[in-house]
Image 1 (tube, rainbow, N blue to C red):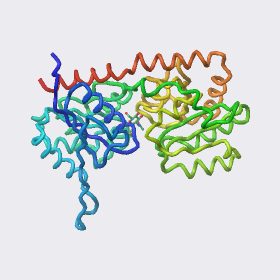
Image 2: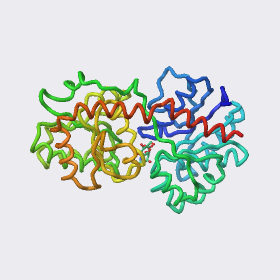
Image 3: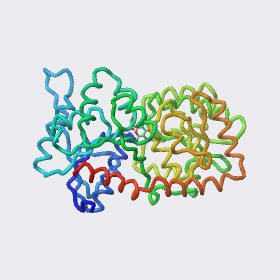
Length: 366
Ligand code: GMT
């Protein structure tokens, strides 16, 4: 018997990142199912609509001159301790382990049902940092459950922390992400192929490499590269576009609350990341009927199969350009678009994925 109305606290990063998106969307779905859901974050999460059944609980970033910086971990722990009691929470579920797992453990201890979802660099980069490893490992081992967004990440987590996460892939809402070919004219000229990338432009996303691969494509096909997002590598991507003479066909689009309106307009989605535990934006592209060309890293092969896209080796820009050209020239592209959407709906439907989290909660509560 699944508990019909739980009081749940979810913890997330509010900014432009996949883990915050996954947490916010899960919170929304759980709230719509009748659970009382509180979302803890330092700001109202980017994807949380103004009208939402989810209650946002702000976490302060207190700064006193004696501190070397804002004490987020302690502030989150204090907020969780106080609010879990006041709101009568049954369970707290954190997204991105650092420092959320340790903060929740510090606040609520082993006796309280805690679930942590690992998202990527919380395991691969930060998790291995000696400054963070010990407290994070202790918190994960003490939790009722740990989940990971891909098999690849679960394997890494086992190695890094000695935990055995339950694998729950991320979901995509097919009613929000669907094909919108009529919008293509807003981003591309008549007769141009529209290639899209969306991310936070951090160095691991290798956005300048995408521009380099695009320059190779552009020699053989009329195409435009739309880079949706913002982040530290934007200036370098612009520089490379100028250097290679493709700047007129590389468009930068600022982050939007409605990425679905841009994704659904594209012909192909590109991802050149050197590390990616899952690749949420690629899944959103598939649901939008947009095949994906991506590097075969981390959990990406769990998502991008030959039926819905192409995988290339990390750093193989020639291979990336060839894969793009092959798909653009393929008579099977329309069929692949249909398959991409059908596959996303079948494998990553929000109802099924939410059900998996509820199973984890149920076990954690017994
Ligand atoms: O781990 C990160 O680098 C940040 C994190 C985020 O908050 O965006 O991204 C990860 O979580 C997403 C949602 O589960 C995944 O889609 C991304 O692949 C993953 N990023 C990496 O593994 C680099």
